[in-house]
Amino acid sequence: MSFSHEQLIRMLNNESFQLSEPTTPQVQPKEDETQLLQKQLLDLVQQNSQFNNQLNIIKDQITKQDLIFQNLSKTKQRLESQLQEQMQKNQKLQEECDLKDQEEKELKQQISIIRPKKRLFTQQSVGKVVNFNMTYNNNQKKNSVIVSIKK
Image (cartoon, rainbow, N blue to C red):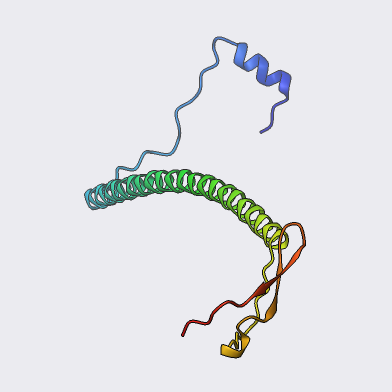
């Protein structure tokens, strides 16, 4: 049997309309089925409890890992900062060393003393003029006279 929309509205608005009781009788579950359902329900409750416990453990682990990650991030930032500072210090020291090396080179250029590799002076050298090839700031070469030889 089918009703149109308007017929259904009229039936619903009609005060004498009442729903009939279901024609199929309710079947009472057997006692074994009730016990089985109770057991299944108990199992499900236990599983749910275990699941919730595991979920809490996982949440705790995630929280700990998050804290560890935050600490590692802070440590990384601190180490990067220290590395940057150390690199800047090293660069300053390198610049100072380069400057000192340059100053040393300039001083060596200003004062250069070239000595003979071997001094072969004997008693016959006494009184002779020897050129030591000494160069001073004013670029004058000085000759020296050997006065005496000490053994």
